[in-house]
Length: 159
Image (cartoon, rainbow, N blue to C red):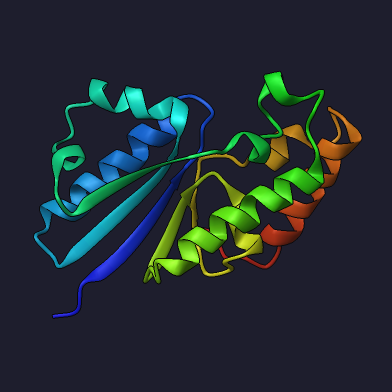
């Protein structure tokens, strides 16, 4: 049986995205299916992993890769002044290059639409989307990013 390789990207804003992603991974690994998962999460969330008792964290079928996400976050108030659309695009290009080297069967991103610019087949999870809440209320660079994410999202079917 072929091993299914899944890549997960976690939004760094708060810990709800991480909790939801870990719950999904935990359920998938509980099936005993031939699955391996790699979790891409911000450095700031690595320490938070110890607070959850999900057994998937210690599962040999899960690897965790702390990743620099700051340039992708137009909604992070600390970065409003220095945010750049070019840096945002560059950060996603670099992360996508790492992800694409892994030859995942499926990439799942929790509320991070930027991956769609490099991997149009990714699945996006979220109860809302940041570009919908941030467009037009911050800097020109953030508005440009929101418009870009809206363009990525156009034509995608939602559940």
